[in-house]
Image (tube, rainbow, N blue to C red; front, side, top):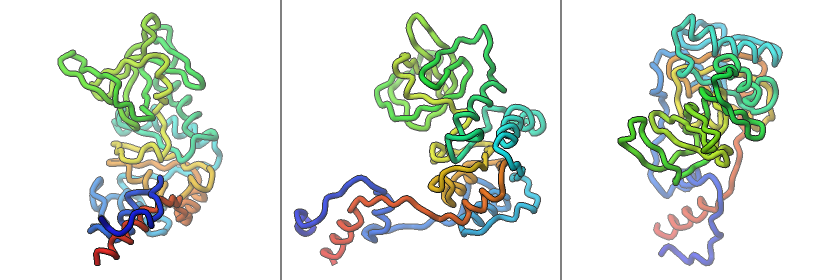
Length: 290
């Protein structure tokens, strides 16, 4: 054992990974290059600028990054919808399934809640042949893009051909609604060839995902990203949120909105601090061993 555990404070919830690194108790390697895109990519260059606290030069022409200035929330939302449903598929040959809309916030006209309504009506409008089920504020329709918002280790999935099966759908998994059965009270979602039947009472585990928050996009990557640069609460408009949003895009990033909001995010390096006590305990153990 390392020292007297009773004399150390308990370990509580917090940023465990960051605390382990800061403790100095384990070897670490810092990754300073982005490999998701090409080295000469505008996405890479601008993301590096943001990460360094510098405003990217938006006047420069990049092959994979575009900034469209829109000064009102309504015009911003209209432009995002047009890009998603028409301009990128028609002009650049990018299928809607390869485009992800991101926003730092759920609220306002360019937040994810209202954007999801707009985007769904643009690419998957109501039709007599399409069944739908309403639960609370969300309407689930055949053809809708949805996201699992919590880990469910027990839910059963099967392959479309019925030859494979397993369990588990996880927070951040994105799928498409393939069927709604009102008699069985189930909604069938296809998560990349894993078919899952949700009981109506389980639909609280799903949210519309044509547009998702930057926070929900962490750990994912997309062929093309449309970022709604909209106003929001200061904790949401930070440098790290902007950097995360930009680096989700592999091939194309279109930023739509206010340059002022973007500048605020670049210069806001506020980070949420969570104190677990783990750093102290690891540091104490290191001192005892030395």
